[in-house]
Length: 285
View 1 (spheres, rainbow, N blue to C red):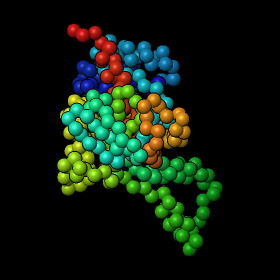
View 2 (cartoon, rainbow, N blue to C red):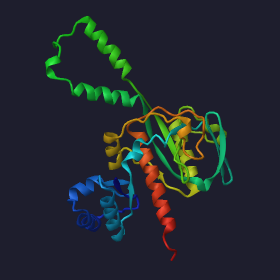
View 3 (cartoon, rainbow, N blue to C red):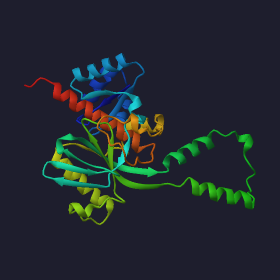
View 4 (cartoon, rainbow, N blue to C red):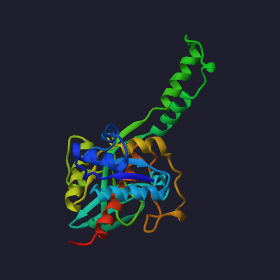
């Protein structure tokens, strides 16, 4: 179980001292893990009851904390689907997926995770890991032959990857995720003109955040949640359509995985969903 600290954490010496008392962790480790304005991983615990106790202790000290199952990072019931188009009509969003369109209220949006997806990243990571595990007894001579050079060039080409600006739309009531790929999305239909696809994507994300009064997460490069999910998560096998979550599109193109951005996005989306649920359940003042 992942015990997470929410982005409303403001930091400060006094706050870190209180965190140290609650968690039993040293201040240096806490400052490295938990930064103001972003989700951070307090602890990853195997025992669900222990995780719940820690989260309750944090809340008692007015720290925004939620518990998310670590399996969320690679949950096949949370597919990432390609969003081909988007129409904004007052308080309604029309999502154009691969072979289906659906209209949802703006209030259905929970959060947006903005970052950079890397196609082919998983293959590159696995290749590097496999290479690091090779015994030194198998190393070849320093001076390569012509065939060695050719093999190196071919393997280097196979492990290349491309990165692109992406934004994941998470919803309150469903687990599937709609992803905007800045390379192929037509922003002109929304009247957005920018010098770069990434700039156009940021404009759209800001518009959605203002319209839905929701938070945009841009901390994939800095958050300790990303460090954890990148180390522990594995790219899931796409589930059969019969295993789709309720209200999920029955047909659509699932996006190939990125071992860094995909699991991070899933965990952040679930954390925001849990936090919104808990706030809604709080007694009104």
